[in-house]
Amino acid sequence: MGFPGTWLTESGSMVYRVVPKCACSTIGQIMHYSDYGRFYDGDIHDATTGLHKWAQERSQPLIEAAARSETAVRFTCVRNPYSRILSSFFDKIAGVQRNGRRYRDNLLPQLAQRYGVDVGSPEDGFQFDQIASFRRFLLFARDTIRFRKPMEPDIHWSAMSGHISTFIHNGGRYSHIFFTETFDAGMQSVLDAARVPVPVDLADIPRFNESEGHGPKRQHPVSAYFDDLSRHLMWETYKLDFQLFRYDFDNPDNRMPKGDIDLDEVHARLST
Image 1 (cartoon, one colour):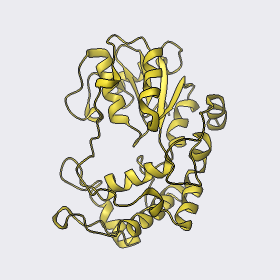
Image 2 (spheres, rainbow, N blue to C red):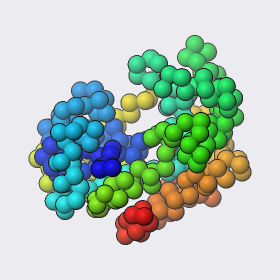
Image 3 (cartoon, rainbow, N blue to C red):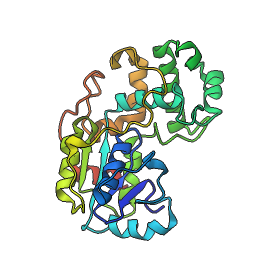
């Protein structure tokens, strides 16, 4: 399996296990800046230079060595599961991608036919019942993760613990896991521990949200999208994410974690 979804600075200072919808664009740009003193011109996910990525065969031996050593800082970032699945819906299902097309082309028609999901269009200003359509999407996301039907689960709504576990299964060990909700403090702890060629002042770093402005805005508080059935589906699908990363399952409007992450517990529970 190796180390899928893992990025490494070319200087070898930081190893990052990407978790989609958890500030990954900003983190990738910070990594690039820490080596070169400039940001990648474009979406960092498209970069084929300036960062080592597991998807690039030439980078794999370097990533494997760094992931299993203690020289580089090995880290990832997590997000409140309620906020993350909502972000996935508004970006990947309701929104239009940077290329002007819908995500995965035929996914939305399938969702409309099988689950009754309606997300409007740019022409009508994305006028649709956000709550009803999101809850139907959540049922679909649960089906893909739990039953792998009607398709394999997508990386944007697969559980964070699943992404994070692949790094552990192959001999990697995280030195830092921090929260999107306290991004500056968490990213600063990584930078403080890393030997970066170029100093990074987080106060001067913009947030790189590649999906922003391409779809509808969320109209309601988080809790409005999650009735009793939706919360049951969330617990069924993301129970480990809530438990390991200390997020508040009982109050969807509380986006902040309830405690610190225990790295030893994460490695113990995700190593099997």
